[in-house]
Structures are given as C-alpha cells and as structure tokens.
Amino acid sequence: MSEPAAFGETEIDWDEATLFLKRRLTRKLGRVDELTLEDLTQETCVRLLRAVRREGATNPHALMTTIADRTAVSHIRRITRERPIFEPLTEVTENLPDPKSETTQVPGDIQERVELVVQEIFRSRRSSCLELAVAFFEKRNWSAVASALGISHDAVRARWSRCVALLRKVVAADPEFRLLADWVTE
Figure (cartoon, rainbow, N blue to C red):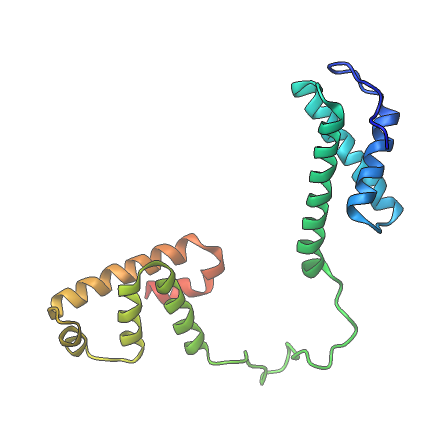
C-alpha cells in the first residue's frame, strides 16, 4: 500500500487517514467484527488527532502506524482481561452451592489458607520471618526456636514482633488481604 498523501505539520486528510488506520487495524487484529473495527478506528483517529495537536505530524505514516499498532495492543489487552471477568455465567448450576443452605461450607481448611497466605507474604518479603511463621503455626515454644537459631529468647520475640508489624502493614495496604485484617490485628 502506498503511503497516505503528504500532510502538513497539522493538516491531515481524515478520509485517507481513516482508511489507512482501518486497514492497519484489520491487518493487526485479523478477524474482528465490523462494529468493533469501526470503534477501534474512531479511537485511533482520536489518538491521532491528539498527537497531531500536541506535537504535529512530521512523519504522519509512521505516527499513524504506531498509534494503530498501540490501539490494537490495547484492544487485545482489554479483551483478554475483561472477557474472563465479565463473561456471562453459563446455565450449568448443578455444582454451585446453595447460599440458603446451612450446610454450605467453604472448601478447604481456613486455618491452612491463612497459614499459606502468611507464609507467602513472608517468603516474598523477608525470609527470617518465614522461619518464625512456620514455628508459630507449628505452635513451637519460642525458647526452643531461640536455641535452634542460636539466639536469645528475647531476640526471637523481638524479631517476631517486627514480623507481625510487617504483616499488619502488608495486610492493611493491600485490599486483597482485607479478610486477614481482623486476624492480624488480634
């Protein structure tokens, strides 16, 4: 395909630019429905207009190619992120628990889950805390832990206190851990 007609610094032949962008998006995305292609073309035109107003267009072909490619990547990211989240539920409901039933239980042991999450937090941040967390969940005596580590009982208690403070800070800062917040603050 030939390059679009020469544009001035901010002069763009929008019909030609729209056609070029639509073709570029089609090549990048492959099969996409016509309405989505129109929406993406308009989105790309808006991005092009903003870029031209902001910086001018000394090389419009390269600018349009870059903007169309980035719009295609953004579209792919949107559909791969949103589709699993917003996909409609299927009609298969036989395995779903009845929320009104009093016998409905959360699968798995809650204590094991809490232990796993706490250990993963410490594993990703501070290994000395991980060792103490394992001892804590095994209900080991701090004196025995201190002798195994070759440090004093007071040093183990002080270290564990710093670890709990770190855990509280992480849990308070991350909304994913809101269910642990009560357990950690007790």
